[in-house]
Length: 254
Image 1 (tube, one colour):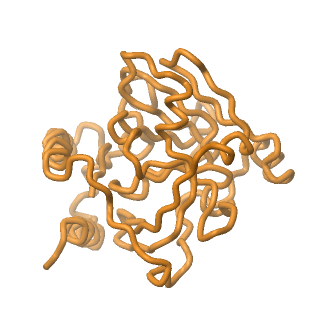
Image 2 (cartoon, helix red, strand yellow; image 1 turned 90 degrees about the horizontal axis):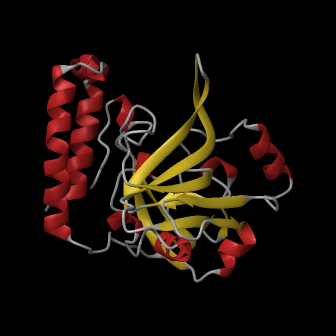
């Protein structure tokens, strides 16, 4: 039987193989883009109704047959990031700010001292490929609980060190967001280790998001700040996600 994840990824691969059909969807005023966007809320609601808070499939170590494929940014050039990488991230700090009662500034040692979760899961890319890896990290919910989110908080926005492009106003750094329902899902972790080793730079060191029921581009790498907010309107072009602002689905559930 074809499961839902396979069906969606197969459809994505088919779309990419004939992507010229969708060239016009990139434009902000594209009718096709507006059509897709109008159905995104329905997709999210339907998935939540179907799977609730269930876990994504987990695997055994025998299922890890290849390395986790690096994609997107693999070696940020930001000066602060390069300095920290050169010292093994001893000076790294994760900031948790925004709509919280107790803002946080956590070192990598602080994060690794918190209760951790290890999970072997499949990374599914919108490009159509997938691979399985073992991830260890601190549940995002644990970090957010320490910060004490305000009742008005609805989203967690992730600010990253990797510059994706340069615009007239300067470098554009990767940003991504999820809602607090997914933020507190037990499999949503801030990963600092992969396959039993410290997270490699190519895969997002020192800290990356794993949100296992969504496509790979949601899993922000090189995170330095988590900002809780009640709206995504002020981030990027208003979608709260680098790729959603450029025509991809914001929720990206699988």
